[in-house]
Amino acid sequence: MEQKMNHLDVGEFVLLLPEHLRSEEEHYKSVFEDDLTSRISSKDERQQMTATVGYLESGHDRFVYNTTPISYQQFLKDPIIIVITPQSTGPQSIVFWVDAVQNYVLFNQLSDAQELIQRQGI
Image 1 (cartoon, helix red, strand yellow):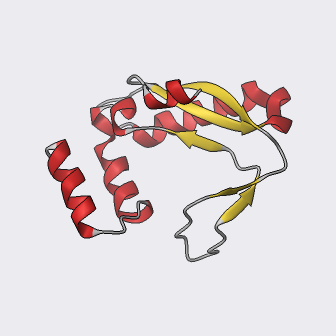
Image 2 (image 1 turned 90 degrees about the vertical axis):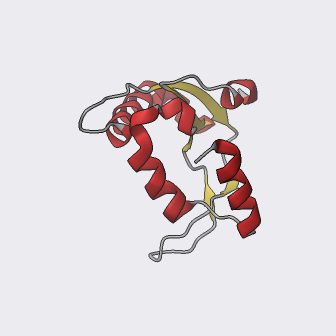
């Protein structure tokens, strides 16, 4: 699964479910494929997203980088995790990524962020 996460093609994402949801795989796969396709599509272009499902052992707390002011809880028990990349979501997903970077990505050092931006030619 790690290999897949590191080499997502356009239109692919990884959906990591807790083991106790295995019997509901098709439901969650459909829900997340539809939702993610909708979120990353622009008014002019639609990128269909397809999930590869993996499983995590149930009963564990997982760290999530949570910046929402509603609750600053940083660990969740058995969350559903989605793995995507800018490349896997396609060129029409720019608005999605602008929002994600502004609101959900933490850079400890300004120089790290500047280096990544320069390296990507942005």
